[in-house]
Amino acid sequence: MTRVLFTDDEAPVLDGLRTRLYRQNGKWTMVFVESGTRALTEFEREPFDVIVTDMRMPGMDGAELLERVSERWPATIRIVLSGYAEPQQALRLVPVAHQYLSKPCDAKRLVSAIERCMQLHALLPHPNLRALAGRVRMLPVMPRVYAALRDLLTHDDATTQQIAELVTADPVISAKILQMATSAFFRLARPITNIDQAVGYLGIAAMRNLVTAPPVFVPLPERGAAGLVNFEELQARSHAAAAAAHALAADAQMADQALLAGLLHDIGYWLLAHEYPGDLAKAVEIAMKERIPLHEAEVRVIGASHAQVGAYLLGLWGLPQPLVDAVAHHHSPQSAAAPTDFGPLAALAIALALLPSDESSAFPTGIVASPKVDANFLSRVNAPFDWTEATERVAEIFEETEA
Image (tube, rainbow, N blue to C red; front, side, top):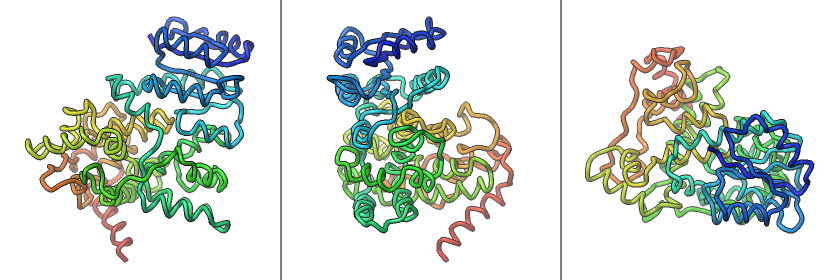
């Protein structure tokens, strides 16, 4: 049974939550406490799957509480339920909170947020792997992009378009900005799946606070752990996949999500190289020795692939489910439990099949390419084009780029 801890210093708020969430009795074990100290005491007795806390509380506030929980119980899903916070308060929450829901919040939305997060356990069944994603505070980013973005934000005449172009250049920064825009850290949450819109909605002041804050981002080495990952190559391929997936989605409503699926599909490699460099190195060694795709070796060594790890984190951050599914299953789109309609996962899978290079190009020579979909896949997903047209759409994108 899912264990959920609610923390708020106002007794009427807790009473209201008890009343509105009564339908969850029998599904959840719910505990309600009035302080951060009491919350930690309850964790000592038995850990929780989810903590939902207010921000403004006397003594230990929500940011400090979540920081302590993230240190000792990193697998716990951390959600803030609070009124709009001051920018500096919100900034303290950015490294430690997975989602921020603004008060007043109806029961349906709160239940949906918690249940969506719990469903992510299917991606990472082992608590130790969930703890890997849960303990991530400082996010590894491309040094070149990070330096350029920090420099740009020091200029008073910087535009949101210029900022968005640099944000898009780094998958990790892109994902974090989307988390901020679709949650309520700095402003009321909005469902946004477009980087330009996300940057514009947050505003330059919030972007400056987020990017220049020391606890949020940390530059990666130019090449990953022990020279394993060529992140420049991986980044270039992610952008190619994003452009191709967007071209295949054309004017469909999910075109923005298809683009993001391409941009973010390998984000798990950034996390594994930063958090599990030794295990990733071992997976590379096994993949080369046994001539198997790297994602299969990752599952054997780590217990999950980079696709599962990346999708889990994006899901925790509240990004749209079709995008999470696309990232999670881009190596196995045929077996994914997804609708047969053409969506972000299908667009990404076809795009990856049509790209001239595989993600193995970012690793040492000898890594076997992952299997790709073929023309038979198009009928399964009701694609609005045949293989010839798909090839032409993708080729046209790269011809325009070269021109």
